[in-house]
Each structure stands twice: as structure tokens, then as C-alpha cells.
Image 1 (cartoon, rainbow, N blue to C red):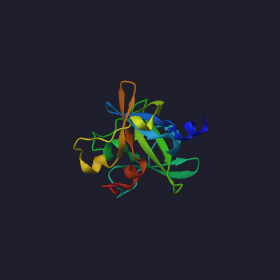
Image 2 (image 1 turned 135 degrees about the vertical axis):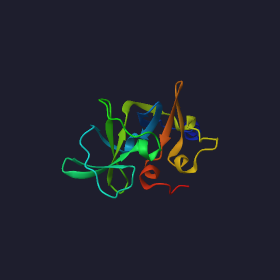
Image 3 (image 1 turned 90 degrees about the vertical axis):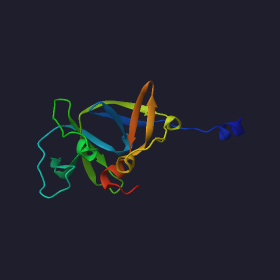
Length: 155
């Protein structure tokens, strides 16, 4: 029996926070997520990259805020009551916030159901995805948080 257990592949589902940008759903690996906050006043920083909205003060720490809409070349942000900032903590312990239209839910996705896009994508934007996850009938584009923050280094 023990040998059978050792041969069985144990795959744990990964939790993702599903966020919405326009009509699309994106998944952010929950182990990166530090906090989710309501939209607040963002202080612009002159001469920063165009996809950075600015910075906020979060519990005494200055956190850069990135517009995922701008990063993905979508129409500019329209802040509504559902707009949120997802604060992620990277492996080097730095924090970055992402403005999203809405936070939908937390889902568990089996890594065996994640598929790499097998169609031609814009190389820059394709590097931001780790794959496409399936949750029931829904498809969720799974984000590579490090690539989104650092830019186009995975291409």
C-alpha cells in the first residue's frame, strides 16, 4: 500500500485571487497577495513609467501603484466603487500595488488543468502569463507577477 501511495502523484491545487479588467478575468497567485485595499488617493510620481499610477501610503510604508490596464495596453482606468488595489509582496519583500476593476473571488485551480497558450500572442503581453486556468466553465488568465512588475524579461 505504501508503495502505491509513493507512486501516486500528489498535486495540490493553487489558490488564485480572480480579478477583473474590462471583461477578462485574471488570476493572481494568492501567496504573493499581502492585502486588498479600496481605491484611495494615489500621489503621482513625475517621470515614472506610464503604467505606474503613483504611490500610496499603506500603514506608514510608501507603495508604488501600477495600473494593470495601462500595463496591458487597455483603455485607461475608470475608478468605480468596485475598484481595488491588490498589494503584492515580492520575493525580495518589496511591495507593489495593482489597480484592478474588481476582485471577484478566490479559486482553487489544479495545476494539471493549466494550459500554456498555444496560439500566437503579442510577445510582451504573453510573458505576463503563466498559463490559462480552467475553473468550471470559466477560463482565467494566470499572471506571472514577477514578469508584470519587472517588465518584459521573460521573453
